[in-house]
Length: 141
Image: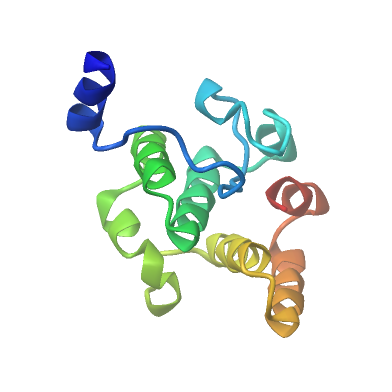
């Protein structure tokens, strides 16, 4: 019990993500080994590690998962992402800091995380097809 509370004080997180709430793009790290996508799918598809972590972080924002936000923020920083881009990620549509490839991946991630709007899903998929390969899209969704 004492070790658990030490972890809560140190990290602000009491446990892992709630069951069934998180869906992120898999990477080959141990911390994402439980992801629904195979551990090497993103790397095998040719997705850049920083792009994978941007998508993971954006999905975590949409899911409002504090544990995942903490995990993927640290992973993105380790992968070389800048604090400026991480700070404006929630408003990625309103800034020029992200490439067209990153924008397509983020739009696809949002559309598949919140699937209620079929029109947005179709538009995001069409945009993704214009900039990402089939393997990259498959790894993301």
